Length: 184
Image 1 (cartoon, helix red, strand yellow):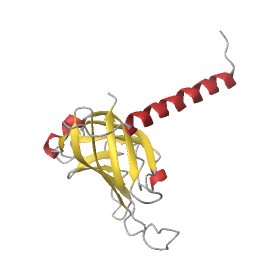
Image 2 (cartoon, one colour):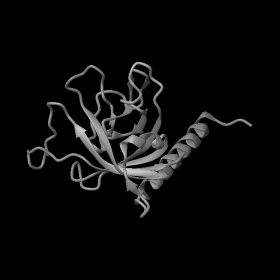
Image 3 (cartoon, one colour):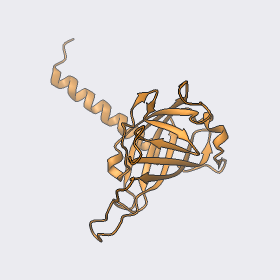
Image 4 (cartoon, one colour):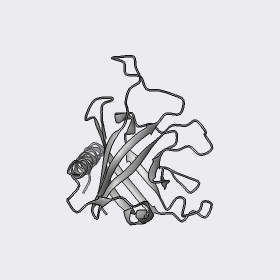
């Protein structure tokens, strides 16, 4: 059976669009169940897995603005850092720019010395550029966990930079809530 390049591209686009829609649908349904418990950082390894994730802005760029994507977390096997300091590492596939969530380093990086995502000091750090003292990044701080997911707050780190609200000319409040629903 021969399929033209145009038909193949169209099928791929439909497949990707429906896949993104499925991820968004999973992440939107992320209401913490009544069985959710407070997050215990000493048990972070239990969060290893693949998640549909949503970041929702509190107020800027618009109240309720959302970004959807996939978060992959695995047990750290890096021998250069103590595993206790960074027990989970991974990648984030998401358009962080949609909610002004900053990053200096590729959140999809799988480099052992500079993973796109790592857990440290109670939060998942995203897009941290190693050896850059004034870089930008985003933190996901889990607050509630349950077997199918976790949720909490996300906060930007802009270094010395500021994001100004164009309507007021004053510093904008950037940040909000996030939710992750296990897909694997």
